[in-house]
Length: 489
Image 1 (cartoon, helix red, strand yellow):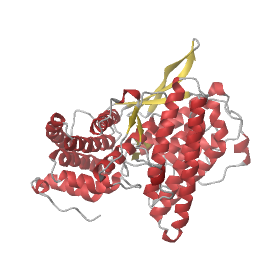
Image 2 (spheres, helix red, strand yellow):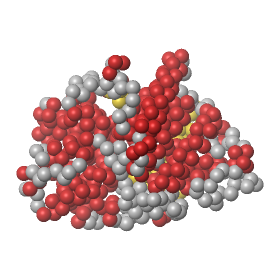
Image 3 (cartoon, rainbow, N blue to C red):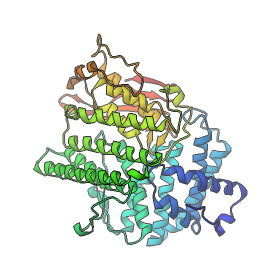
């Protein structure tokens, strides 16, 4: 996209603000959506900031936070929270200005004001993800979903479902697309445990208007998003009540929809054979990874026992192969050759994005697959690349996954030849497949990670355990980010 022209609002910025606007234009806007581009970031925010100071100052705050993440080598270090550097001070000043300019829009509540509030809210979510303030980011996202419901004239989402109406203008479609992607990231982060949630139900398409093919890889991703939301809804329902024929029918519909997606995706890949480049190859690999993860989720979403994941072993093995291939492709761009110690991972976060990538699939594999070799390989891959994908932090995911494996396995494999020092991209041995699987009594269910501090300084690990005949949420262990150490409860 050509650099947007300077507008009156941008021209009125001071010299320092102009530097950060330039950083956003040249660096941040391209890093936000590293894989699946959206008109929200390529077009809409630039249009909005030309006339809306709330959006402009929110973008400057985001730019500052992004630049700090790229240049700072202590993103996870427990430096004194009383000392605020000039860059953080600038971020907070712009944040306050943006909030101040938002107030009239909250009072007006007309369609145009709702749009400005939503655009600013989405920028705030990304800003807080870059800063590592995950709880605040989720609060902004919830507020954004509330505003989206108001803008579309929908009733209160207390039912848990936000049934979206068709978007008649590109502006609204871009807003829905951006907030939907953030929502899917957060729901994936909370997917493994019971929680209250809002499900985005896309506007229904008439059968006649449904395309029989994907236009491009971006379009293929958009085809996966409603399937994710269907699975979130089905999982939520299954956790609340006994499984009935209704849930089984819904599960079958999800599987049918997945099969349709896979067919259209294969057609797309065949049509792109003569246009291969590294971006296309990596993006299509990310889509394959997410498709395989969604297959696992679809097959397990209505079951509340841990052994159901054993039926997905072949899919987990395929998933780890696809993830390893993505790692191999990425070594051409970045130095990802070696597994990185956790204490080194915690010192920098230069390649953070607000997009879907590989952290969630790696984490799900490490926590839910009980084939020891596959779990260890997933953790090794997580530790090759310190970055964030929205709410997903590779350092935190690796820490938690490693702890879950240690707690579950204990000394169960004592005496077995595990050979955990294998190099990445080496084939599994026959004996890796032959190891006995963990008994259900060893397995943790509804693993939940609670992040506290801004930025995160403590990770609390919970799971469900039976106590006096009742499944209760129990605190298992706590991780001190500054000390780099777990303390079991």
